[in-house]
Length: 585
Ligand SMILES: Cc1cc2nc3c(=O)[nH]c(=O)nc-3n(C[C@H](O)[C@H](O)[C@H](O)COP(=O)(O)OP(=O)(O)OC[C@H]3O[C@@H](n4cnc5c(N)ncnc54)[C@H](O)[C@@H]3O)c2cc1C
Ligand code: SF4
Image (cartoon, rainbow, N blue to C red; front, side, top):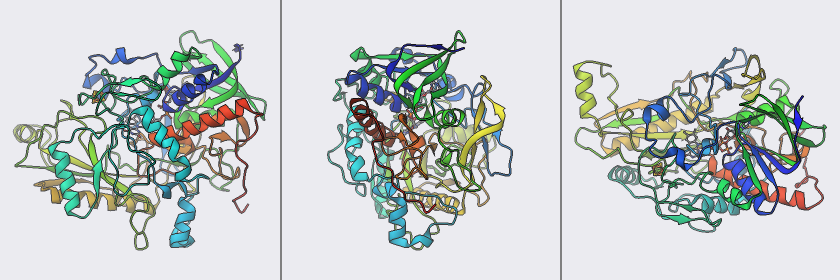
């Protein structure tokens, strides 16, 4: 039997940005917070000198061990899902700070269109424009209402950036100027401008200069060391939870992180959450940590798994379209590869591609969201075009044009010649939610503790494929204008299917927000409609995926949820938002 521990004010699953922001905001107000983290303790010191591409980028040392727990994946309801066991295809965070530590730092706001996607689409194009099975819905909040929380996240993480010429309005400029530019970034910007687009520098949580955030945490200037994506920063130069919010929470004396603690269930009485059941990975002992507020911030798959296993909320049924848990699962579109877009090879140019940071680069948003008129397009929403100067590490800096033999003299010659002569432009786009794309518990496969794995069923709709193909064409257009001698496209076949070789770090949905408890699991404070002291944070609450990366929006909603929790604890409880009935049922 699980041992019951002393009650605290708040217990959280996970220590990424979502859990970390909650911990900082609640402990600053004097509340006692415990965060349960399945992975090991880690700090900035653990990353010193850790520029080891084999360890981190090939063997994925910082990622979840997929032999112990993973997801299963299938491309339609007719198939049997297979477990994803290869970190090439699934790179989930695992230790203190989660994936929020080995993230790149690309910090983007979503567009006003995103939050009102259903009503704005109907208003502009008519209801018939929405494909039959597409389940886009409004979020119950507008961009303007979320804007102050975006501003807060940017100031905490120290985002370096410049104004997006076609971006949404801002109440303040970025807290830091943009990162350094490079000749290849300038080439991308010039070519995009020539074509009539509006390039701007990627907003980055990699510091352009030393910065102290409003909580008093100092983040150092970035060294452009290139070991950023998939790595922790030994310079303390990447805005991540370890150097910001977790440290802020720790300094209050009200915070404890309990590492090696895998949460297995939400304990509840049917109307209120009582606490979290977890297992100590080292001793195998089970505990229950009771709390006044329970927060799920364990990333999309854990959040959904815990809700389904603990029987909280009604599971989504794709046949009847009833129920909410598991609904509107989405991701960024991939074609069984790390990107879709265009790689150009230049015979007469050479760059220093060995330096870079996780979010060094530029992008074009002319096709993002609803920035372009969709009347004559056969898809909704859009894509962004990005040139990344990530910094190519020794193993990665090894590209040759398609058709080159995989070994021998010709391979060696081309490999040497094209070293530092090839650039990639990526099209980033999401698949939109649809009726047949959802999460549930796998009937066959179990994790190492004997609980069912979470199963992802993803059915790409025609519009998802058309949107991605359009994006690849725009990449080709820009790469041609940049003057590449050879262009290899990573294109999307018409019959592409999702399977256990998907690739994206940006999965969302399953416990989505909205105004109506019939069609959403949480309200805009991330509070469960069915259980007022249970808050479900992170990308699981997003009703659809955008073309932009999700983390800044996850951070903004974590600030909003924390505000709600503080009101909840200081008041008389209850729902923080009145439910509305928007569905016809
Ligand atoms: C390589 C990589 C690069 C990325 N780059 C970017 C980027 O540039 N921009 C961007 O916007 N996004 C990026 N992302 C996505 C970004 O990392 C996530 O959106 C973000 O980390 C989500 O924050 P979170 O707090 O919800 O989850 P996480 O940071 O993943 O934290 C969840 C935590 O919960 C813990 N946990 C999970 N299950 C349990 C359990 N059962 N018990 C106890 N603990 C548990 C995990 O160990 C983890 O520490 C990237 C992701 C990866 C993998
Ligand atoms: S590139 Fe900059 S932010 Fe990234 S790990 Fe290196 S020093 Fe840190």
